[in-house]
Amino acid sequence: MSTVNLRKVAMIGCGFVGSASAFALMQSGLFSEMVLIDADQNKAEGEALDISHGLPFAKPMKIYAGGYDDITDAAIIIISAGAAQKPGETRLDLVKKNIGIFGSIMPEIKKRDVGGILLIVANPVDILTTAAQRMSGLPESRVFGSGTVLDTARFKYLLGEHLSVDSRNVHAFIIGEHGDSEIAAWSSADVSGVPINTFCEMRGHYAHQESMERIASEVKNSAYEIIEKKHATYYGIAMSVRRICEAIIRDEKSILPVSSALHGEFYGIEGISLSMPAIVGAHGIENLIPIKLDVYEEAALRKSAETLKAVLDDAMPE
Image (cartoon, rainbow, N blue to C red; front, top):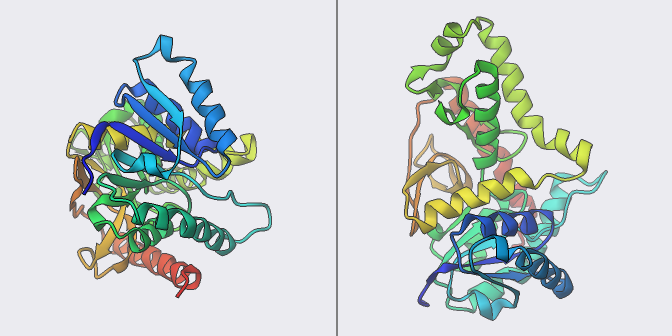
């Protein structure tokens, strides 16, 4: 395994999400070297130049467009490459297209002695995480997706707004698919140890069911709303990528709902990647965390896994 340079990150894919993430990572001060790779070399070069020109206002860093030979010693290789969903295109069409793109990226990773962590950000992230695990040849603990880290941040933000409390003191997770079958895990939600419903009542909110349905729906539909208004969503995910990279580089052992492979640890779900809280550190995923769910949330999680497996089985080449 190659020696890893903990101060180096690679970004494969320089679209809206890739370039916004690269910009967020430059500002983070976590890395001193960043290589940008894109099928369109000019795009990668342009983004590298654009971000580099702000370095006099930031910390010293080498940012450049490169190729796959430049990824071998990167501590984290982020993959945001993928096609965007077009109007009238089904989710399955998009999956097949993006698995095809991964079919050209993963062999390049596999034939190099990569020692770092593969962080999948391209959508649909759960399916593509499973595809990357199968195609890359890397240990599963070192191949995971951004999962519901952004959905969970949206959930905390909306709960913070609803309760007029700092969203950083809200402890709640969105789990399952990063997509339409995601689950708001209300059973384990609290604000600084106070159960969510109790805290709501302290703040004068008593219509629990109505509020829960509204907030969960707003979280799920956030991306659609943003895309409708500005045609793409990239700042929120860029900040999520930065947060995951912090946990890895600083070996924080933070608990984040990343998309990782399940092998029966939760409710018999196996053979698919989806989001459950996990301890994330320098070596990737250390442990999955079994949070408390009620029977309805358990059933919804199983259903989410079945939805993903059906799409994966249809989309993956034999």
